Length: 102
Image 1 (spheres, rainbow, N blue to C red):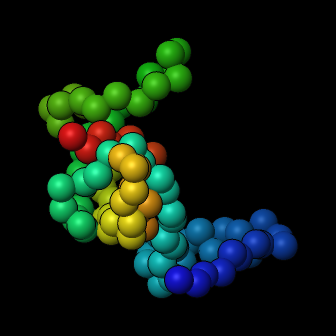
Image 2 (image 1 turned 30 degrees about the vertical axis):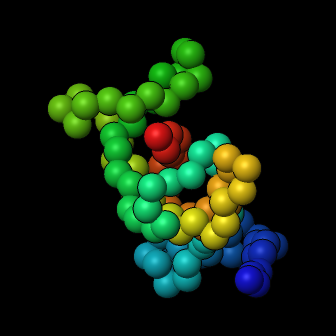
Image 3 (image 1 turned 90 degrees about the horizontal axis):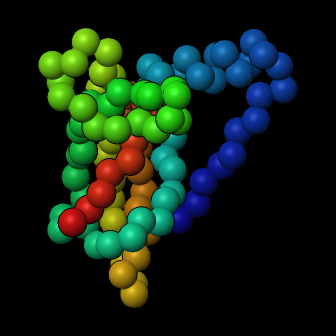
């Protein structure tokens, strides 16, 4: 597995890079370790989140709530060991997500 880290030297370059990621001209893949082992080796997760700034939490809410933001990501399990899994994750919405695998 390989990759690159891209740093912007100017605010204009940062804005252009962010726009390219948003338009999916370039793809960003994050690695994360989760507790548990997902049932499927890869998949897409979708939920609706509502930020509570007072408590600094982002709970899952009903899609019917007027202030929710849709959160979508694709994941692939790279390895699982001793109750933990290493995942490659691609965010599609730019919204932070916390999913629990049962």
